[in-house]
Image 1 (tube, rainbow, N blue to C red):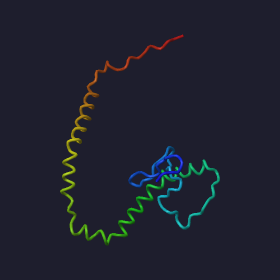
Image 2 (cartoon, rainbow, N blue to C red):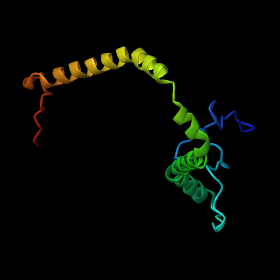
Image 3 (cartoon, helix red, strand yellow):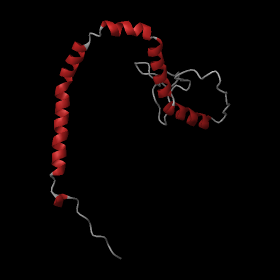
Image 4 (cartoon, rainbow, N blue to C red):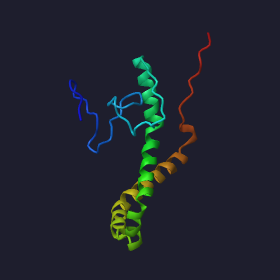
Length: 137
């Protein structure tokens, strides 16, 4: 979804809102969930204050709301999920193959990190940056 006028992308290819600088989202109408029925509408006329409050809400609340709604969905649909879990999850072969595929890269990274740590510990103490004498006036 794009805004008309400047070609700003509001949502990425997976449907997630695109973040903007300052902690908000490009879509000014984005809501992670509908506000509760008991919420009081507080009219804010200052556009800058509204953007700051929206950014604070997006950074502090939206992620937690989405996690809660996801967990609630799993709990509410437990009667649909349990038979699949009870009958057996036959994906260990795929998980094992993926781990084997990624293992060389992980080992390479850990090895490079170990070499960097050893080189850092073995550096010559005299090789530190020289301290320039201060000028006295």
